[in-house]
Image (cartoon, rainbow, N blue to C red; front, side):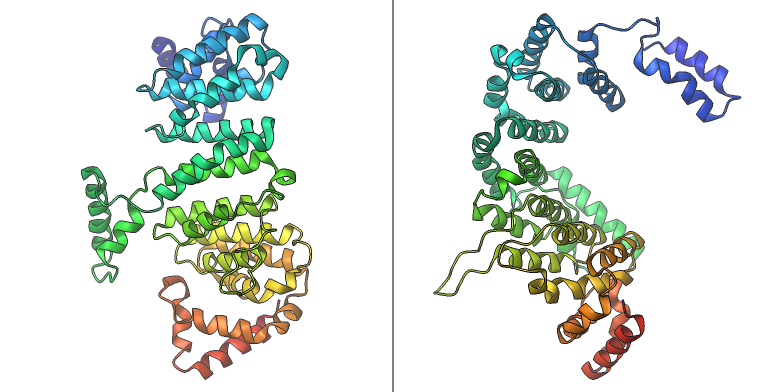
Length: 420
C-alpha cells in the first residue's frame, strides 16, 4: 500500500533471515501503515482486490468481526451494487464471498429483513455461469452454505440447473477457440520433443490437455450442495440421475474431468448416497448402487493417470469407512475392489503407493492374506488382466505375461511371498 515503505523494509531486511522478516511484517498484514485499523467497509473492499493475498486477508478479518445492524445494511447494499457489475469479475467475487460470510456468521433474524438470501438466490444463475472460474467456485461455496441453512428445498431448487449444466458440458463443443487449439498444439509439440517415438495420437493428447467448458465447476457445485445438505437428508433423497451423471464423468475422455468425477463420487459416498438401486431392465433385478459404485471405483484404480488413481483411491477409502446399506456387506464387493487396492500398493507414483499401503492396512486390519485367499481366483484374473494394459506404470508385468500360465504362476508366488 506504500511503495516507499516497502522499499525501506526491503533495504533493512536484506541482512536478516526470511523468517525474521516474516515475523517483523506480520502486523502489517492486519493494520494499515499508519498503525490504525481500517473501517469495516475498507476491509470489505479487500474482497474485490486484484491479488489473492489481499482477498484472503479481507475474508479472514471479516470472519473475526461483529457487525451492527447499520453495518449489516451497508454491507447488503454493497453486495447488491457489486452484483450488478458483471463484467468485472473481482466485484462479483467480492459480492459472492461477502454473502457467504454473512450467511454463515449472522443470525437469520438479523439478515431476514434485509432479504439477502432471496436476492442472492435470484442472482445465482448469473454467478454459476460467470465467465470467470473463480467466481463460479465462489458460487459453489455459497450454494453449500445456502443448502446447509435451508435444507432440502434449497437443494432441490439448485439441482435441476446443476444437472443441466453437467449434462450440457459433458460433451466437448465441436468448435474450439483458436487459443484452445494453439494450447493443444503446444502440448503436442512438447510431448513429441520429449519422446520422438511417442505412439499416442494427436487426438488423444488433444482430448487429455484441452479444457472442458464449465464442467468441472458444475460438478463442484453439486459436490458443495451435497456437502451442505448433509448425510442425514441426502441418504433419503433419491435421484438416479445424480449417479448416472457421475458415472459418465468418471469415464470421460478428459483426465481432469475423471479426477473431479471421483472427488464428487467420494462426497456422495461420504453422505450415504449409495443406498439406492439402478434401473431394472428386461426383467433383470436392478443392481444396488453400492455394487455399481464399487465397480466404478475399480475402473478409477486402474486409470492411466496418477491423479485420477489417487482421487479414486481416496473415494475407495471413504467407501470402506461408511457402513454399507441395510442388507449388504463389504464381502459382496471384496472381489471388485480388493485386487485393485492390493496391486496399487506397488504403484510407481510414490504418493499413490504410500496412500494405498495405508488404505490397505485400514481395510484389512492385518487380515490381508486371509481376505485375498477368499477371492484368490478373482485376484489372479485381475492381475493377469492388468499385466497387458497400455500403462507405463504397470508395463513391468508384461514381461511375465508371455503365457497366461506363467503370469498366473508368477503372481501366485508374489501373493504368497508378499502376503499382507
